[in-house]
Length: 410
Image 1 (cartoon, rainbow, N blue to C red):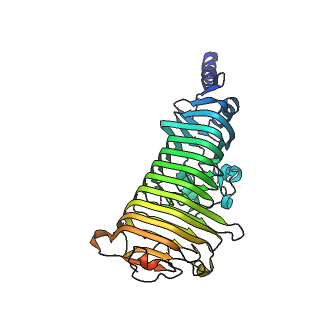
Image 2 (cartoon, rainbow, N blue to C red):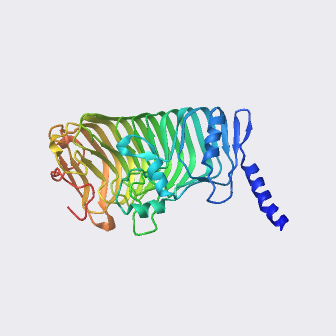
Image 3 (tube, rainbow, N blue to C red):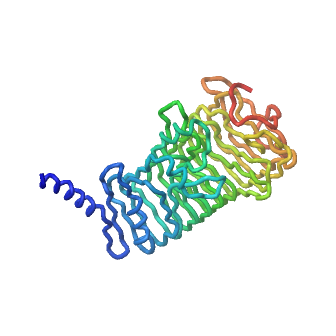
């Protein structure tokens, strides 16, 4: 009997020893606790950040790390982080709703925030982040944004950061968010949010940039229930290329301008070599009737299949009100090599504000047909200063409250 009692205790002591952080100088090697989902590795992850997060390196070895608490790591400096294992976030929804970290934008919050300067986070094609998202989709019941529902990973006030080679499955909310950051590179990422119940994933965007500049997003595969890649307010010099998206909102500017007293500016955004399947839209801009501007945006080499309404601009997204009073200017937006099939007979619905007509919208090699051989599509446009010379054969005006998603032919 005594021996039977000693063996389990001895096994626990071995597991604890194996889970200890192995530190040599400023290099930390972390091993997961490995005692099942009741374990919580977040404490030792945060400990490794404190020990080796400056002028050092952190390696998370293979295995499963259970994350039961928020992780705030915003003072990283000159650090290389390698993740060779799987991070699984806990199913304690009430904890996350009460404790996720604010990211200020629209009341949103996050489970994990990283920031600082000169940071690399590499997954080497082995890192897997599992948010146990199905529980979130089911409890949300298609209600959209929910205060406290956490973004999986937020890049926060970071400068010179590389994130590469990571896979996401079933995130809680947005996969990633980039805020107040400069010189951000995110490459070779695989993201998938897919609901297995009657409830949709809702708001599982691939990423949103906000108040950030000099961002490179390259070589992504994304399955999401909302925008694939989105540049929100005060995003500048954003370069997006080699992206494949399924079940998404495509390549998006916005939404911006929700608070007229706080102008939003988006400029120098380049989307190139994008493939979309069964998306709501392909290459589009959504604003509220606010202030600021969108300028110098290019959508190039966008290919798609079965997209609801490929090209779209609205100055009054979601509300359909005060559309022609918006002073948020949209100019110098270019669509080039836009090819694919639309779900209905509308290839573009563009309504610009009468108070701030769109300037210098250009279209080159736009070839959109209805799916299943449905024939030609219509291009609708209103309040475009250069409409006659834009390069697109508009067939009619676009009403101010024209919907983002159609339910049939227009």
